[in-house]
Structures are given as C-alpha cells and as structure tokens.
Length: 127
Image (cartoon, rainbow, N blue to C red; front, side, top):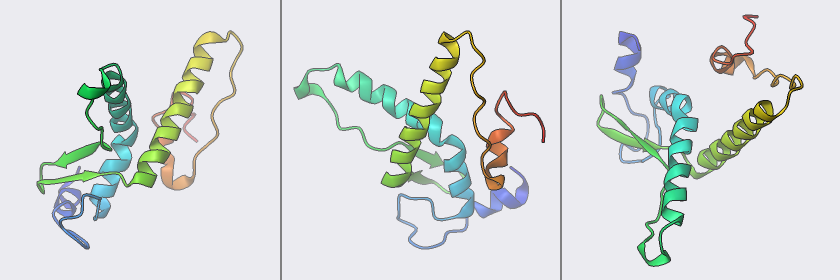
C-alpha cells in the first residue's frame, strides 16, 4: 500500500459507526480478503455445529480490524452470501480438478476491473 492509499484509509464517507466499508480503501481491503474471511467463518461454523446445541455460539459474518483507522468492518449480508457462493464454486472446481485426469475447462475471464484477481490464478496467461 503506497502512502496515498494508506492516507485514504483514514477518510470516511457516511456513518463512521457503520460496521460496513465506507471508503474505497476499506472496500478494496474487504474485496481482497473476502474469500479468506469466508473460509474462516465456514470453518468456525463447522466447529460450532459439532457442539451440543446448548453450547453453540451464533456465528456472525466475518470482520476485519483496520489498524490504521481502528475500525472493524465487515461484508454486507448480500456480499457475504455472494462470497459464500463464490467460495463454494471455487472449492467445487478445485475438487473437480483433483479427481479428474482430463483437462478441466479453464475458468472464464473476469471483468477488466477485476483483472488483479485473474493475475493470481495459475491459468493466467498474461494477456
């Protein structure tokens, strides 16, 4: 994160008490880590579901503490639901790759504004 981006994390738009991302910098951070947060949340849900009903805790949507601003932000319910679907699709695709000997179809290319995600994929060809 460069100095200008770091500075952006301090500026807020809207309600500073909102648990949701209010700046572009916060939104970018959540977008970058949304699948990782979702995976951790699903693991916690699985652990809790193994407990007797009377001992289970309610699992809320995952959140990140932004150290620079001291804010804890989380995905909206719709964003979290979408992240769960995306993660499930990724996990199914990876499972399919691991059990088939055939060449699996490569995933489709994302929109241009999401190209940074494509660059992290092992199928990225640099175009």
